Length: 250
Image 1 (cartoon, rainbow, N blue to C red):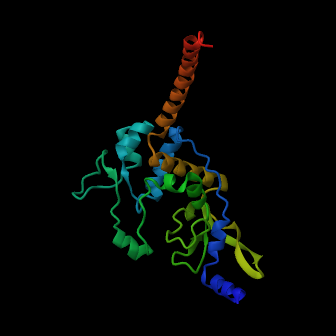
Image 2 (image 1 turned 180 degrees about the vertical axis):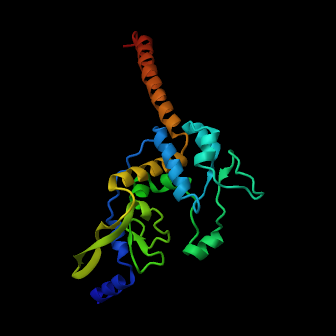
Image 3 (image 1 turned 90 degrees about the vertical axis):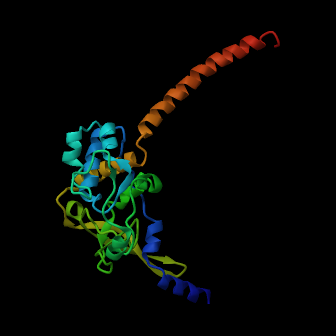
């Protein structure tokens, strides 16, 4: 009876669920102090993500101030939109998009999330691996699926760069039941970038998203080391002072 119940559960649950738990997250080679990388990532974000995903807690001029981009560079590389009156978007405007949740639900079946804090919520390794893990799945409405996020509603917007991948399956036995899961992905149709170029592209994009999730993190880390150094020096003087106070007692 127990075996029959298990078979029933396995037939109901998507096989991708089993693959999700076994996905190995790749290490994201990012450095938010590398502002050249953050600048490239910001441009990638605007070119490929910003039409649907907002970053509504960030302002364009904050990115310019932190990365060293001039107002002219911001308008040339990041700002391509206009406001409701048709005037160019202001430098101090928030990074919002025109897509509404209702339209997104009609188009994709789910509201499109804001990405300001996505790297912090999910982790940079998760985002990095996710952007490299789309594969062809004719059973999905968008024609693609993802090993990190099974049954994802998002289309593979970077397919022209990475190419199209196919899933290679393996069969494992769980309590006497054969279960099929994804073993790895193979490139089926090349994109415009080599694997190394695409990895660098995604690394820059994730680097920007990491910066986006906490713009002050570089200052925080720098201040943290200074505080630790101060405490170390203060400890020496405090210890010597303690020795001086207590020398007659001991």
